[in-house]
Length: 365
Image (cartoon, rainbow, N blue to C red; front, side, top):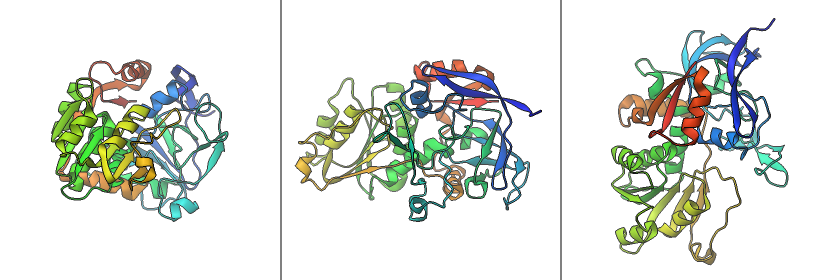
């Protein structure tokens, strides 16, 4: 009889609950990880609300930190008992897209139902945890293609220090990397949730000299200052586009990073950038986007609109943990709450309603 574990599973829109599931069996290219810490992502809330379709009974979550308990026969260079993380995006690296440099992509579409999809299909990319296969909000997780996706945690780094690496940090930094930031640039970052805060930190590391952080929450704007923002704007009390144009002498920002996934933030980001500027989009959108004619300059403005999915793979994870170990960035302030796995329904309630100043929750099985 299979050994059992606790896991948070998608039941139906509005319901993610703790359930008993068998501990996964692994194949030759896989690894079984005992989760020591994980967290809840905004994308998990999209799943909870039914805005992103997944199979009923699927274990959700895609940010694993843990210990190897079993290795597949073909996996080399790792050992049982080793502390590791795996990226939220864990492609097999054999697809045309991944081989051609898009390391987060498997280049595949699957039939989909609901609001997410294109002509009845959704782009799965390399996102498997909590999307196509069971995810990280459980006592154990199977990591596929483990040789390419597991990254050892350096000695001296805590679970909380590396908890942002699998997704939030990788995604936020990708937003900065995709924003074509040059030394001395002016960059606007819309939304200072966890991803936006990491985008702010990434913009500073990329060399931006003026970083403008936008949010409606003063506590989050204060955190953004600690992570590198030079100027903060509260959209509830200020006309953000007008302020950015004022700050830049009417020129517009060199880049804008959109880290929420709404029509309003996307449009404001587009209106903030100069001709020839870049809009770097990180949001997961649940409705069609519209590009306003004037903000787009009728297509004459040489604008770039780049999208980014969280880059995965062991080398990406190694680089991010190296940044943490160097002390160049401290993401500990992002972990504002801690819950046991058995109380994850309460954690979802807190996180989805954004109460009590929550940014990220450390979930401990």
